[in-house]
Amino acid sequence: MSFLESKCRSPGPQSLFIAKIFPLCYTGVMGKAFVFVNQKGGVGKTTSAVNLGAYLANAEKSVLLVDFDSQANLTSGVGLDKTTKPGVYELISGKAGLDQVIRNTSVPRLSVIPSGIDLSGAAVELIEQKDRDFFLKRALAPAKNRYDFILIDCPPSLGLLTLNGMAAADAVLIPMQCEYFAMEGLTLLLKTIKRIQKSINPRLSIGGIFFTMYDPRTRLAQDVVKQVSAYFKSAVFSTIIPRNVRLSEAPSYGMPISLYDPQCPGARAYRSLAQELIQRSTAGGSNGA
Ligand code: ATP
Ligand code: MG
Image (tube, rainbow, N blue to C red):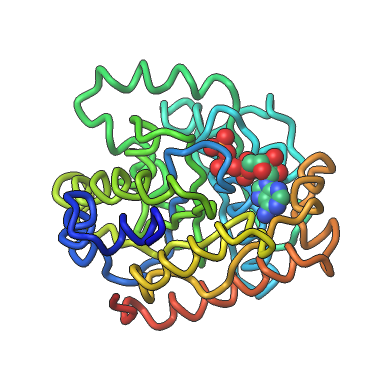
């Protein structure tokens, strides 16, 4: 039995915990505001937000990307300077309005609220406030009628910024790398989502889990996909994002993959993931696990 099998199936405390908590969390895709969350760094949150956003826009949807990470990789990934102001920090601190912070990108129908290093101070400022979990939700409320999809990119932590992201969203999208310890991270994440559902956002659903940077040549990756899919069933998107160097090159040109190399395997995968998300959103929460 593999490590993952043991995590998923053996009656250990952790697998029992996941079994108990997951059906409570998963209600299928609902709403239009999605937040990319995984406390693990470098799993493809930003790459997925940019490229999913670009392909949703290509499919005639109006899309707002929200960079809610002070690393501002999403901002530079769509070709904007990380010092672009005003940005999301000015928005949540009330120094700028929504119309002042939304920028166009080179993809028609794809807009972005940029971020920058000053957002890192926001968490410290917010922590003192009574309504500290709802700054982003309040700031984005007027955008909900104006876009078909709002995609929020979060930093690699479950701190205050990510909590704000989950308070503002209708559903969580979880990018997951195909590695052994992914399940452990998932347990913590599900626990946090359940806490959010019970407190600051009862309507938050799990939009789905999808695999990133998949390398079919490794048995480990195959094993992770098999076991996690068997366990989380329809919560797992059938599209798998392959490891593809073109996806890692595109941000240095400030382009989504749809402009940089639309024929590469990574582009085809994100196009397919966008179609799947549109289908799941249209189905409106009927994807029970
Ligand atoms: P962080 O937690 O630091 O915000 P992240 O989860 O947003 O990271 P990304 O920045 O999207 O992750 O990706 C991490 C790195 O992996 C980047 O250099 C990115 O270009 C690269 N990358 C992402 N997806 C793929 C892929 N499918 N194939 C190859 N490289 C990828
Ligand atoms: Mg990122």
